Image (cartoon, rainbow, N blue to C red; front, top):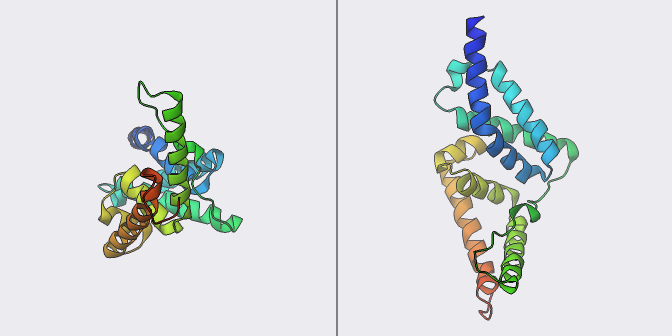
Length: 179
């Protein structure tokens, strides 16, 4: 009984720490909050069933790997990939910005998100894991199952592509790329 209580507390602490970031990660890949909740619930169910000693010390990586696999299963069953929702990442206006500036900022953000959504899924995923979740190249490699050097290549390629295409969006009047 005491062992179940310790495990229950451990799981609840992890749910409090990781539920929201995992839902955001799953939602970004699935484009649907309800399905993201289901995937994360399944992830924590697998955590309950897992041997704690085998995942201690790398729990975050384990959770994201399981969540990623669950998302992949959902997408495979549906037979389609869903791009990131642009509405999800609304611009936060700066104090003092007028309506014109906020509208321009929102339009630029929409263009940026549209460009990100056009990147290959693998590049979108490593961008999210690196910049949204703060994972290291090694952790991303372990979550995605690609080599660290491939993670670096994917990130470099995605950032270079975005930079080249964003120049005219962020600095109107500059030639090259598409908005």
